[in-house]
Image (cartoon, each protein chain N blue to C red):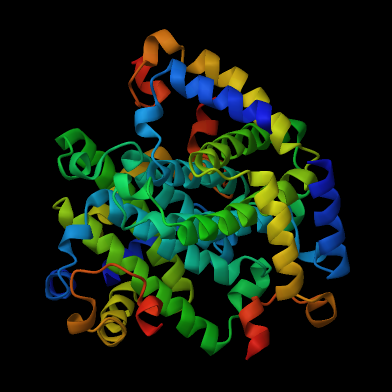
Length: 114
Length: 114
Length: 114
Length: 114
């Protein structure tokens, strides 16, 4: 993670792209990259999405790379470590969605409160 | 990264949520979580987006955690490591956007080919 | 359409919200509203998505209303009529995806060129 | 609107694409098309986004056309008219965001309740 952050800072600096990298712009770029993943799956059935050809997996890998890049860029601007944020969020999610209550159901957690 | 993957597998398993976690569905959930980040920034100017209050940074951190969780879940289903995918994509991006050519410009790379 | 545009201009003006309605911000808001539609469908199978309860259809209707509102706001700022844009795009799409060539296939049009 | 719906049904039917047009898939396609609008604005300042060249406006127009197409396709599958949905949502929004309360502020409406 540290190494990725270092590389991304260098990459932006070499290109003088830091001027474009406001958190607002990085949030937009992140959403654009995620849509490129969604595009790959939009017309597939769920079953088909589990059996991608190696060429498609490679394409998804590159798009996941782009999402990870912009997520890390955004997080870095705000002093956040994405891995640490995920670990902390799992703790919160364990409280929001107790296994005994939500087992086998995918409802939004607020619906359990009603 | 390995530890996050292990925790996420356990989290899904405890809740019997693996049945919902097709790559197609995870791509959708990823895009929904990213929109929660975009929502925080949508009415802010770029300058304002650089000066978030600590409470807002904490909120962004939780949303970044959620994005990282679904990105990792999706990647794991396809045998991909998000960190490795990012490192590999940087190598590709260095070729697509040579520093000497794109310095200080944010055009899409295809526009340079025209 | 004309009536909707008139109402939306009045709505923004009464609230002094025109200052926030740059095309950039409206594009972000549009993406956030679309994600609220995606959220409704993210864990459903395709079959389930065809058989929503009336309460869910009403929820989707409200989100479609929000998307239409921001799409019209954005289009209006740029002097575009969404309905006219759609009609013109269909003409282009007829050329991009000739019925004889793409019948029953959902590949991206560029894939047909290869 | 009626004419657009008629054309879109015919367009899908000619190509035997109705099989792909589940509400779930159409929601995904809608989000992908919106991201193509966001992409145009991602690196622009708000001021720049107000002064697009005619060529860029034409590009946005085509993307708005695509969004309108998928929004209408999705709405049609669920028996919803997007224009009517927007008109009804404005009525709801007038209650959620009273002009006297929110004038000149862009906070999310829930924040006013706190």
